[in-house]
Image (cartoon, rainbow, N blue to C red; front, side, top):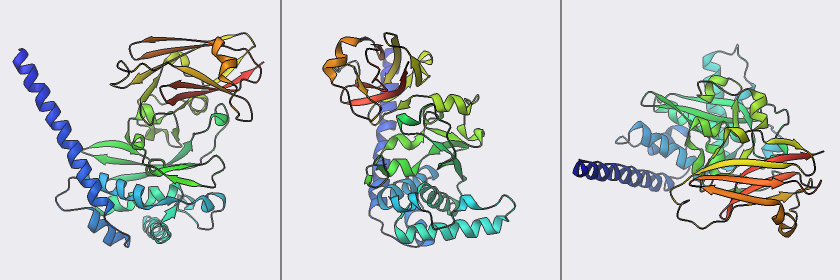
Length: 333
């Protein structure tokens, strides 16, 4: 029995290693391809020997490396994007408009989220891979927790081997500053084939079937979710700590629980902490808040306990290691 287990582990390791190696080769090939029109670009990216999974990876990686976020269009959209099409428009008109918009983004080498999602869909369409553009709410800032959000984002669902999977090519390509005046290109793999129960923390589709969850949360529940940060670690919020819009009084004690899904957590000697920010976004001195915090680590589970000692406490950032893992909006009465 022990021998069979070892053989199974070796086969599993070989399979994972092979997948990682193949993905790296797809990425290298994709990165070398320059700018072309949509048909030529597709032909160069969708190598005949590629599986559908590899084609999807090739399209995704090329876009993240070659398209930048258009901060100017974010503030002023002078182009009628596909989201403005009417439900009564013919399929042919929708197709023409999508192709026109994709060509527009490719020519400028930049676009907003709709542009990223459109190019990805058009490339998938040309490979006859089912793909849809999803519209809904995206949430990145702690100040938006508890606020009523309107439709402000677009991403994709793609069908591979009969299963719908979620991808946000825009957020995977980099990030903007708080005022959306500068874009920094940085690959973020957390938005590639993201599990639905993870993406729901910051993506809420207008059509809730595209949560891909059996029981989707309500929009109000989504608006109250804490913000997750997971560039290195995969974070899961305990059900008792799902309300990110905390209303409390001076002297109250908060207990916030998260789980870090990472192979290295049990090996590291990280000390968790909570950084506290005021309403203007300025961090309060750590020395001021260190006595108000206690922590407990049980395997991969972390419990942060914080006693509210200042009315200036407006945002709580839960840190583990060198990065934040989650953030809460705090209203002190």
